Length: 248
Image (cartoon, rainbow, N blue to C red; front, side, top):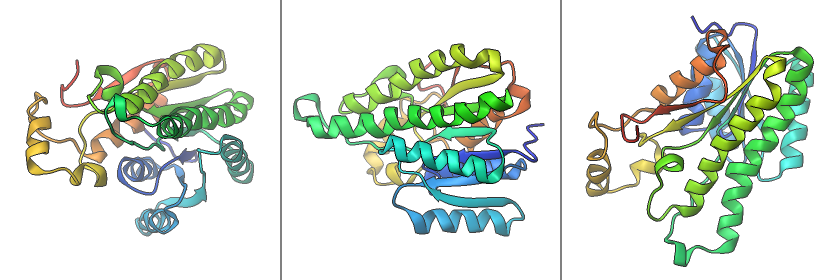
């Protein structure tokens, strides 16, 4: 099940957190994984070395999705060098929280540039390779707040909601080439970002989760591994919710 042997997968934002877990999961299934990073080169290299030490295949590449043309070129170069590109996971993203009346235009623009435009640009680069192969898997990492909203995260929620529409549209455009495009929408997950919350804040959030706990990055990665596999060949244009029931 979920055998990715011989396949090449690129994970943007793959140096830590959910991105790193996704890279590890895809490598465990046999994929040659390329961990993309914007500024965390040391963390990306450490993540790749850990995968290689476990007997899997991994490398790193600087893929700064805030510069769409540069990101597209890097993805194209990686695919050319490795001879193929089977899976793209558009995971890179940022969050700059704040109430609407305090939301700066520059911050809003930066969130959209990375979370939305960067993801779409990455998909565009991957599509060009996948069309020739007449097969491929693209997975956008969205968020539960893109579906349910969250106070203080207007810009972030908007960017993540837009990814869901993008996934559906791209899925319709390239289904005839056997390219599937889906999204996962993680809920409250244990990452560096959420570890900075106070215990009171964590308790308030987990109180909204029917399963009553925080999710793990590995649980998100497992969902991505499924969508990246041949077993998911009849799944496209969908949003897979991995949120403990936080939004149904």
